[in-house]
Length: 246
Image 1 (cartoon, rainbow, N blue to C red):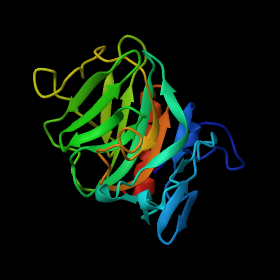
Image 2: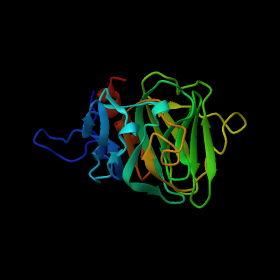
Image 3: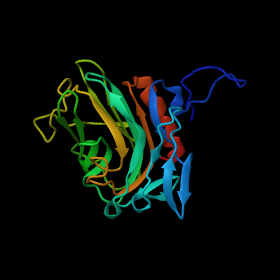
Image 4: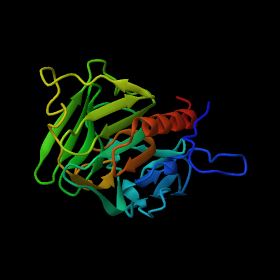
């Protein structure tokens, strides 16, 4: 499968696409790269974006096990990781996050959070919750009637456009998921209803380790501090689908 976006040149005529081909990549926890493990548990997952914003856990009791090139979080063990520095999105700022997960349960799996609240949480098999906190807390529930967030291994990509439009789109394994309208089980998920900013500094738990722990594997995680174009989204999805056999 051809994955290049036609970016740059090399001796073979083009530069192969990777996630760093897309600008504004703030954090990339790359599958099988930069993990430092001891006795099967991972202390640090180094950032492959070039920003040195590594994910680390100083307390051995809260470290996840190495599995499949990523981390296997156990909810009951309070596994989570702290970033070297927080990643921030301004009010009306666009962003994109892509991750590959294989969960053991599908309820209240926090993907990222700040010191006070979770930022993105897989609430159940039908809903993703996005909580913005700049200038104030505002919750968007992105609901799909097809229950896409089950316990099977899958790639997800969540994108929000910048400005007052603030359009959320979600993809599973490269296919866009239909977000049900607010008249259903969505809340503030329509265009322009939540354009607030946020920051995050924790992977796998809310409130810097305060609860709603992730239960299952995070095999890859990438975050951009801008909204991605349709071409960029297609490139990211294709690259990760091939890497993970999805």
